[in-house]
Image (cartoon, rainbow, N blue to C red; front, side):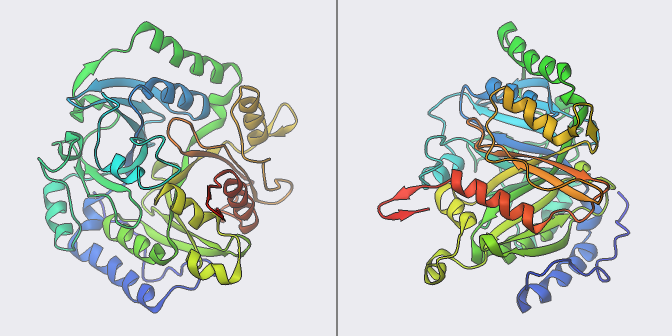
Length: 418
């Protein structure tokens, strides 16, 4: 794998979010250590995302993904504890591995985390797990990163043997985000190479339910308009923003693109991008969103804090995954994203608010959030980057989307409404 030509030393992060002296000192040190220790050469682009759902929710989740994303079912496998369903988009984009426990009684770290938070207890085994990145030599990478205090799973330490399989090296869940990072030399376009278990055939009824989503997308032309995952956003606590970014930068060859204050929502949006791809959808951007002040300090100011409220109610976890929509004007005399959202809405897909952003004569964004999936607890964002917009996001759009999600994610506890 060739080293990236990206010049970290010359890059000036974008944005108006002021980082601490600690962050400014250690970010360039991490870049330099990644290069010197060989991590930049050993780790490539994202190859898969991993999500776990409840026992019995696998097929329904895949049917939802067929309607709402460009991912399409490829194959299923079964291990001693799980069914694994693999979905593909384009060969150069990350695959989706959907894990489904065989029993409602299954328990691992996901259940133990989820029961701590009121809004995730109803789906105790449901969680976005993490991403898998290409690595041709996981043994060397493990030794290198362990010397930098990154911890990995070993056989016998987990209930799910996938985390310690020969095919993928997984980190322990991050203390700051709850997400894992995996590394693998497997070809995720050929799931047989991953070692997920014995091949499992879906029933004719299950296959038919998945086919309905494909036919729906083709009938309305959605398959030609939905492109792939543009970015994925994790919500974390205010005081852990910089730690989460620096930990992520330690483990993968991304760069800190920049951070902006979203003052209206008392939060910041922090973007990390992969410099070795020409298209973010080949290795989606990782976004971390956090309150500007922790809740107990914010109580002096009484500012909105939907980001921290989400973490207090759901835990540190992935909040949404964004699907990019092909830029253009639909024959129905609306932007493509408006058409896609309209068709999905007619099919009963609920959205948090109207599409935000203007796409007229200048580069801009149009975006919208769906409501949380009943199967994954994830929000799907649809985003159209109009006229080659390259600023990644706009403050006004993020503020509107954050506010809409906050209204939907409220939880009442005693006399505290958040």
